[in-house]
Length: 549
Image: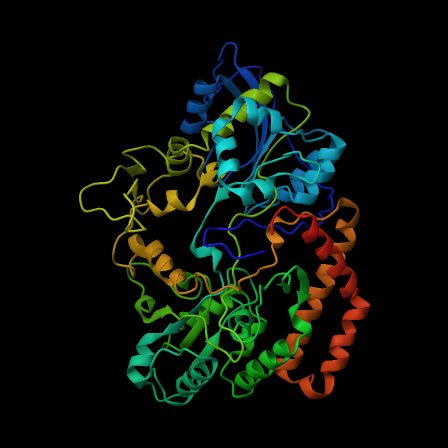
């Protein structure tokens, strides 16, 4: 797929199995509003929804407004975040499921595989006609965003569910590197631009006592094994060959390839091993969780962290008003290596669906539900449902306010709640974040001091500009490729095994339990037993059949 200057939407279809656990439901009043009062003639809609600790969907003021605006009586099965996926699964497998599911994407969602399976079973209904007849804003969003449309339309032509469309700019380049520029200045070092520059800087951090305490306690580079761009391998490997940190697939013309068996990957591992052997990379970067990573960044006795992998600095240091280290860490550009200077790109809109309508919904409930969702695809709906009440949670721009993108007119200013203030319970927060294209997010008023909380999003915006456009000219569009239903289980198992094999052997080569010169060929041959060729065949066929090129 040719790289676009605009955002791309892509998905990988992974198999999901149904688990067995328990799920409770609420009593079903015929007609009620958010306060429990009867609303005559309202359309009853039963909803399975995620509910954060700060929100009570039954008494929420935004719930009440929606019920009045669309003449709806919601019957909530409100599920806490913990265990939400299992409760959704048992709801479906038991047959006792609601009219609609309304989910927070980072908690749980219907995978593309789920949508195909439940769509073919008739459990979730196609939304095409409902959108065409009753949801002009959703239709406009699909028409305006070709990749969102490709993500939403299953291979049989049906839209079985919709994902939240949230174009988080800084999320699209997650694998950033943040370096201690205070240490650079103290040691008289320039910002590293190449892989060799970076090695020299890390060496200086280790040997020249930049924290000034007379101890060799500095950790030149660290990271974690979790999400949010904290793995050190992608940033370092991208000077040699593109590493998407997910599928490891590449695209050359129309041919799908696999990066970890290439000579460039081998050379990249040799470079990373050279840093490891000199103890310039924290060994914990390959084993520790985010909590351990942050303990290094916030070390109590002295500042010890030189460089850190992460989507944003709040992962490894505190960034609040009184944070002691927040100004010290600033973003590096992708490193120029011997073959490349890539940045890992991932479209921030996830595939799957956070909204579906089931076959339990009456025709009236179907229409009311899609109209309600259509409202969330408007600017007004986003501000009210996701941000809260005007004058309480946000206000219109004032003179002197500056938008996140300084070239656009500001749209709203978020009013920060005071510490200890009781949650207002007047919005749906992440549950309502349905249509926030980059233009909407760019118009968010942000402070101009990037080192305080009111300017944090601007800090991330500015950091991301260093990475934008540094992805390869061609990317395998894993985020918008639908896998044939008959191949999903096979593909998913192969992919899991391959990723585990890549991770395991990467660590073995870097730590030295395997030798690149002696063991490389047997490592490559090992992929035969993992059915790499079959995996590539499935992904090649899926790419060839996709509408995204």
